[in-house]
Figure 1 (cartoon, rainbow, N blue to C red):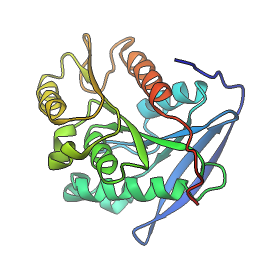
Figure 2 (figure 1 turned 30 degrees about the vertical axis):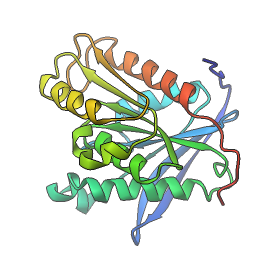
Figure 3 (figure 1 turned 135 degrees about the vertical axis):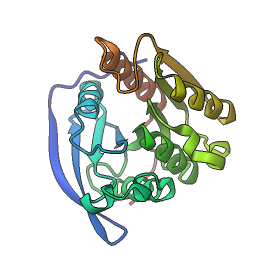
Figure 4 (figure 1 turned 90 degrees about the vertical axis):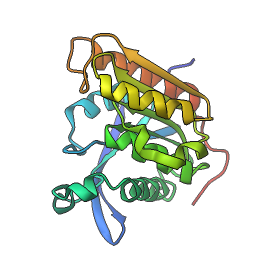
Length: 225
């Protein structure tokens, strides 16, 4: 594993076109980046999630670009059907990832996805349906079971991270893990609950995610513009 320490980065806000709407996003690119990680937040969260921002900073310090964006508009986020509409969320992840391939700064970057809660399921569906676009996945306290039959189609190396005391989600992750045929790993964080608020728990998540992406994301050999 080689981690490229970063000395500076640029951050820009965007309105990303998707499904005839605009989704606000924050793209941070370290000066030495060759890959970008797209964040898929869970229900009740968004691009300003403190937990995801912490993880994103750890990734940026390792030389990975990050994109944090809102999967849903404010109106959509109030609709529980849309919050759990994995097809909708995965479609937007795929569209936003494609958008990255058309941006001058990221067109040659490989793309990974970090999903939390429902975002974990959406990330796996997006990876299954865009196998040459999303090439590594990390799920934090995610619902990979929501990916359903798409689990069989995932080829991206996948890391599932769950808290030891998040018992129902552990069961769901184990069931999903058994259905994955890709390179995979499942890590249970000792003493942690669903949101990893315990001392050191989120830090461990961030390090695991950083190492997974550093080891499994490689720069693209072609320009996808």
